[in-house]
Image 1 (spheres, helix red, strand yellow):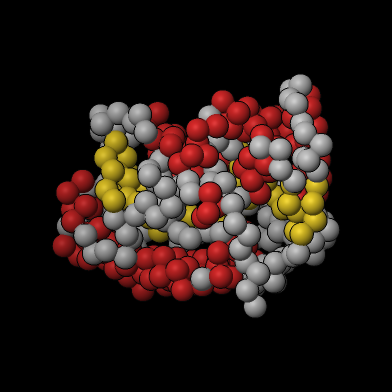
Image 2: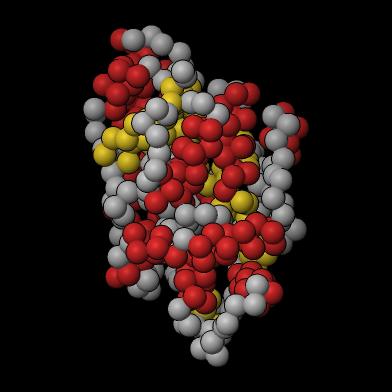
Length: 341
């Protein structure tokens, strides 16, 4: 059975990817430091036949020994601090995880290549935010310059540059993916869609930054996992691949659509559940948008999930799995962050 390491496998995208890979009959080694939760809600019933978990920071050099023990065919590096508001309040954590953590993984891979000399591929999961604010009508391609706006996106841009340098200097077999906003089952409650769902279910106002006109491109997490799998199978070392749907929606219209879906489900919605515009965060990018023609053409990948149907399924999942919210401290995930200047 082929083995794959997933760093950050207890995170939202990571745990969905672990499930996806085990269904493909890979044995997955999940490395995660469990900073925010008891563990992964989505992986709590994972069979030992296909899965092993290590509670470990990606800055730890023990990663080399894990590679030597299991000899995986690939590493998916999803371990990262990802919440922009948190990066405004505590940027040091993002430098440590996103830059130094990636550096350590690369160093352990370089050491592994020298001492074990087994073929192994690194797929580094990045973000569309490295490209910065995109004017209406435009879309970022893999050749677009990096223009990060927050400590989060700057730390991810830095890690991308590290990856490319190790490909060129040390001949590490590595590929970068830059994806748009993900949504779906198991997303942490600090993010927009699960926050809105939690508030609908708990008769609370729906907080929207500024005037709600900021635009984001969205992808259902399973579509993202399929894209990452195609990069594993067919992606070329040293290349970057944008993974997007081309579907953009403003935060305000997304909130209105979610309310419509909830009403269509005949949910009882309190009068307290109404849109509440709140103070915007510093340096809030207005629009992200990807040109994903490269992965469409070269790897024959395309998204399958329509946004409205995906949002409907996501709401149903949270209703059915309301206990998911109890995996997290309300103080950590439901307190307003990102106001520090």
